Image (tube, rainbow, N blue to C red; front, side, top):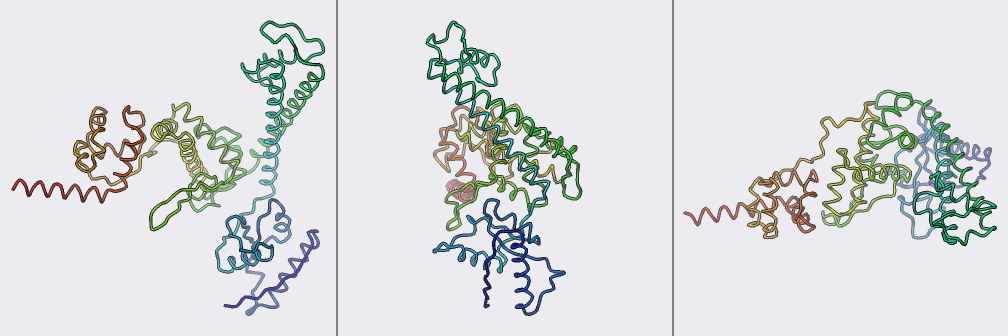
Length: 443
């Protein structure tokens, strides 16, 4: 196979971008054999994503582009834009890159407003942190009792101390805050109030925009006034998280399955496999806004552990000792649930929800496990006292994370049981050999 290269330069002015498309179409129609029918074949091209700088080209060229993140394309040994473009073009010609989903103008508008609101929230938080940092330097430690901005009682005390004539107050440092520093603190309060006001104003506009839009299911569309309340039936998912979800997911039809959506949210670890063995796992970054929103919801569920997802996550934390791993696992369940809710247009429900994986475990009494692995000997009594008498019961309790609450089962036990579940063939063969040897001795 032989490839021909045609190269030209154009500026980023709108008219120049249109001219660039015309030049590309001219090259395709004049140099191709056979000549493609551009009226029936979608205009396809491949482009590297560069923050937002590729968006004008997408708007000018339209068609069905493949927008590629350069971090997953793999760079050449010599890094230049020309070599990168060649590599992307070669990949695209061989069918590596799928067509990219281009969000509508309404979705992009919603994303910009959400990003701006997040910026004002960060500014308000930073102002509050600066205020507390400043007043602590002069002995005013009232911030330990609550927020110096959101707690009205504490804020009134601080504002009184930074006024032109601060009152004498018991239990506060008598040295007071210097006049120049008082001005700085008052300015920080003004910044905080302004940022909060802008964030609240944007939230009303974000909510109005999201509720006025239509959102796709697997076969139909639902108005925002239906889709957003539907998504908020998910445990610990409020309107803000639901709208953030819609602004980035847009439609469930974009994704092949729930696993692809979880990876988009940064909740599906990639496996490194060598010689058919998993050597390590790497969690991709994914969409930062969705990842943060979903893991925060998972964190709240685990802390309360009054809901089924929360209890499962809390038991997983007790079983592994890793809070972040547990919150990510719960967040992934939330993402999968919301994906299917968007597909079906149905509210969240725990009915027929199976949190236990099915696994083929050969069923023997747990009292016989030490014959196969002596490490199980110290745990037999603990398991039997907890009502677990067979390996099937043990595997079910482990996979549903119920063993995390059993006292006496530490990290070594969970390593041992994972080895047992992952090496069923080995344990089954050893058990059969032991039984066979025992029968021969009897005869």
